[in-house]
Amino acid sequence: MTRWLPAIAVGLISTYPFGYLLAWITLGDQPTRLMQACYVVAAGGWLLLLRSLYDAETSQKRPLSLRNLLLIGLLFRAVLLPAPVSDDVYRYVWEGRVRLAGYNPYLLAPDAEVLRSLRDDHWPLVNHPEHAAIYPPTIQLVFTTIAAISPNLMTVKLVMVAADLGAVVLLAGWLRRRGMPEGWAGIYALCPLTLAAFAREAHLDAFVVLGIATWLVADEQARRRGSYALIALAGAGLGLAVGAKWVPLLLLPWWVTDLNRRASGRIRGPASAAVGTLLVAAMVLLPAIAYKDAGLAIVGPLRHFADAFHTLDLAQSILRQAVDPAVAGALASAAIVLIALAVAGFRLSAARAMLWILGGAILLLPTVHPWYLTWLLPALCARRACPWIVAVVTVVFAWEADRVRETVGEWDMPTWVAAAVFVPVYVAVLASGLAGLWARRGRSARGTV
Image: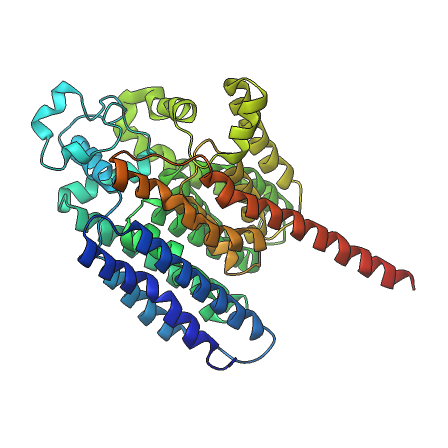
């Protein structure tokens, strides 16, 4: 049975791409229930894949070769390419076209009268047309490039899948250099959440993952070689992640502190920290030059979205029951920053620090979407983290909002979904903490015998 476990796992995972595509072809615009069923089966296969990888951890067996991983990953993604995209993608295309036409998407919302001439058949599908752009400048350049090449939905999907596959290759190389099987990159590459987020829905978070993967690979190599060039590459990777979504900026305090601790004969801690910080800033600020007339409008909408939109925000919704909503938001924001600063004080691997910092942020953000969890998957390729493994499974409930839209015509997240997704995660966090304490107690007891 153990011998065939990887093949069984891949077979179950295939239920998601093939099952979803079949449901979409036969049912048209209402496949959410079947999609959720396919996702649950695929998530079970993903758990079996993790089991097979963990079982082979101390042996010389390679349950999934890199070649097979890439072939299977390409097949699953190709199957999902015809599937309909997220409504966010209409926004990506629109903002790219706005910039290409010489306007500033940070200053003009999609429903601005001056942009009427740009409206096409897809314009009614652009989400939140009353709000100006919220995405950072680096990813806006990606949107503009897509608009210049071919402003259509399939182009966006192909670009996001290309970034996604680039992350797979980087993670496989990272694992190989760590002395781990390359097939462990399948934890990311064959995760049904990855397939849903990028091959099906085409979310820009593929660039967040690509940036994080670049950062992880280059940072670890910089440790070994003492190379400022690799530190600069790691900074560019982290800058790419921040330039796609602002949240990974929380990783910077830990990384700068870690670089300062790394002083050696070949590199100096303060110098390496400066190089890394400058590259992060350059990746974010240089693209912002194209939008300099927007000023603080580049980050201004963040506050409004944090106040006006709440999705899967279990922690904040509990806080809002006890205190004023504004106070609840401030407390959650302060907690996110404090976690990032506290973790900066510990000597951790980059993967472990990332799980603590970005994981803590996801638990406290005012809005969480399923694809945000993909930010953590690169770290799971190297470290076991039971709470986030659980989250990959329970996040299936988040698509209940799509089910509501199918039945009533409006996207709305049922109130019980946040608890269904995150209560098991909190239980897993507590169980993992207690297990760690028990293990340390056992080691201490053995040490005194």
